[in-house]
Image 1 (cartoon, rainbow over the protein chains, first blue to last red):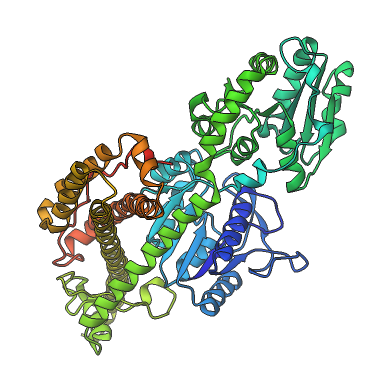
Image 2 (cartoon, rainbow over the protein chains, first blue to last red; image 1 turned 135 degrees about the vertical axis):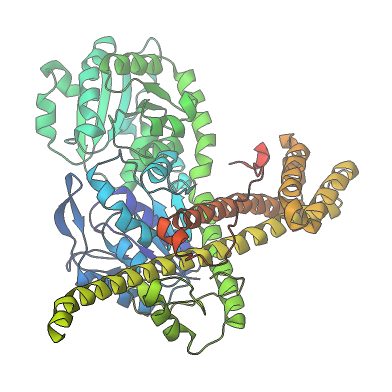
Amino acid sequence: MKIGIVCPYAWDVPGGVQFHVRDLAAHLIGLGHEVSVLAPADDDTPIPPYVVSAGRAVPVPYNGSVARLNFGFLSAARVRRWLHDGAFDVVHLHEPGTPSLSLLACWAATVPMVATFHTANPRSRAMTAAYPILQPALEKINARIAVSEYARRTLVEHLGGDAVVIPNGVDVSFFADAAARSGWTTPKDEDGPEGAGGTIGFIGRIDEPRKGLPVLLEAFPEIVAARPRARLLVAGRGDAEEALLALPEDVRGNVTFLGMVSDEEKAQLLRSVDIYCAPNTGGESFGIILVEAMSAGAPVLASDLDAFSLVLEGGQAGRMFPNSDAAALAKEALALLADPARRTELSETAARAVRRYDWSVVGADILSVYEMVTESTAQVSAAALAVVQPGPGRGGARSAERGRGHGHGSGHGGAGGTGNGTDEPRAEPGRGRR
Amino acid sequence: MRLVLTQYTEIVVLVLVLILLYGLYLSWTATRLDRLHVRLDAARVALDAQLVRRSAATLELARSGLLDVATAVILATAARSAQLAAEDEREPTESALTRDLRAAFEDPREAAELSESTEGADLVQELGAAMRRVQLARRFHNESVRAVRQIRGYRRVRYFRLAGRAPDKPTFEIDDEPPAAFVR
């Protein structure tokens, strides 16, 4: 199949949507499909061969924060050109609700479309002005996918309409087969109820409060007090020195900031630690880092966000603590560090739970959706072409409508209404539709 | 006489322009509705195809000789009923097939044992995929119904009969929950 994928966010910026698109493209190409990804990218950003740049994303205030988006007639023209050059069987849009490339592609495309909604947002009053404009564009989408129950709920509540839940994919074996690093693991004699050690891992932006590092740093001194050789390994972007200053002096030696790590190092880190901690305070609609930790076999300790609770199967596949409660975090962490058997149990349950997130399963679901949508649309068009009568029907009907707007005699008022000016295959099965 | 005409001309022109604009607006709404009808048609075609695929997969498994004869009889008759059902019987027969499938695979060892042979594994795999697709297709279909109904509900659509003679197509409600062994 020829598949076109649209990513609305800048390719070089790390983000859940971008990683998902990258992995999805790689998976589909691996299966032999022809894939082209349209994404915003700076001229000097290195992009893989399957990505087509739509130009720079422009930072603009949107819905309360600054977003980098592509919009305007130039972007629209680039989208149309990509669609035309690609001649895709199906187009897969990501986050079409954001006013960027995906929405533009939705407006312009004439082939079957599948859309994935990634975010879960609380309702914003300003956005209600956008919905009547968004809705007609989004109506063209044949199949809607949400990456989590929460993203689906956002969709139902804000835009109306349902979606099927197909989670973000993870390469489980990449994490499961990685090797632990001795420098990051806890020596055997320091583990267990009598031991004084333990290794906790955290991956995320250090300076973004919603990622929860401040909560973990608040709890850490208590952990060290009970287990003096306990260590905290922090990977991610941000000012390490500033974060260190937030800690009491005697504890600073137990914390190591690894900075940005490669994917391989991330997998190794997750394989090495005794606990992976996700103290996020909010803004997560899925929690892919949890799935990655579970794939690596790292016992998970996470805040009790709804999205996390779903991934951790209500606490079966990982432990949870009340959001932002540092004391509870410390208590749970100490309990886990003292109980290797419990950690192994969690690890095993998690390993079973992550199978549904593996790309082999997620990719198959997504491909099923592509196939369903292309086959059925082709069938409907074929049936229509067999029935429809070409000729003056289109032009004539337009002037009839102009009069009083009812009684559409021969059917259609032309295809111009959508503003794209291209010829859509109009299906007229002749079953008395108008 | 000429003076009177000029006085009213402006208003008349304005009113005509407004009617024209409103007419275009209605035309656009009609186009939207039409597009949604097409989408719904496609979704219905997809749903029918997946239902057929599911009953075919069930039948193939039942006839393979890999199941015990009682289960094979139950599944074969359920699948055939679903295939033969008239439009108004579709929902109950498809739901019945789902329940029979759940009953047949209630014991997780059933699917595991079948998957031991290559033929069995293929049949189970195909059946699992078909059940999943039925779920997906049904959701997409019902979402299309909702979208169509929303536009049909607009006052201007009802008043100007923009939906024409097209009947209201209902959602497709069945029990499509697969056996626990097939849920990932």
